[in-house]
Length: 371
Image (cartoon, rainbow, N blue to C red; front, side, top):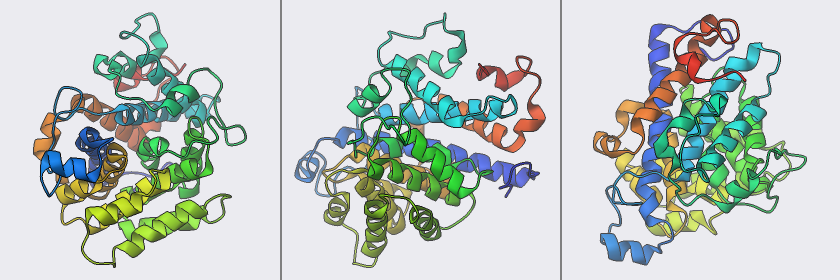
């Protein structure tokens, strides 16, 4: 697979990568939609509403089946920011965290505006997608962190006490930068997570998740991907809770049949590292994709987050065609996700050959202003 900058991609490699990009975005969104109706419910309440086995199929949230939360919205804006960063890398003004921050600020505008503002020409096509203006329980940390133009950094992170998993759930796209070295993928995800979630456990979980997706997108097994992420984490201050959670997830695989009780124990207090542990565990022990996703959401913790994290891993691991077709058919915003995924895959595999002078790029590149 073409994993270095400037590498030549064969047709088969391009098709495989596009399938993994599509799978990552769609899988995360499906997991988000599956878990959304369960957020805030205890395991007993889930069983009372959906039976002893819990939720086994999409059920309505926000008035429809297949509805996604702000987690998917932000993940899509992550991709938008990354495509713009890649397009701008030959302009002399290349700073990917800033491009992603501007994309997140465009998402923040969707949470207060009635609809697209045609006067803001540089917002690009994604910010003109009206379905993204639905307010889907956005996390307070995201709204506060993006309330002004000041970008949080590792030296001065936004919401420094925030340990929640929201930043991790939007970080799968960073892992799809397969032309980047793994440590740079982790660094970018960490820096972008600190824009809203400033506790080390939160932003290092986002970095670890991106690093795992990165390894999966390059064809590694999940176990090998987790081991690589653990090695990358080892040098970072504050990494121990995240490393312990990942080790706990790997150890739980050997502790008998999977159960909601074990998932809930891994989830802990709902922190970022616990959510990632749930996702890794459920993907490792799931009998198939449906089982893994259902296991990931049937617990008393942040079900939409754990579903999104597990779905992103499954999509990166198996590609688009392995995802349940019936669930994809009902997924909110699926056409937008496919366009965004294909634009990203095109940019990653063929970008430099397609770029013209600033302002003259034809076709799909016109969707991503360089300003």
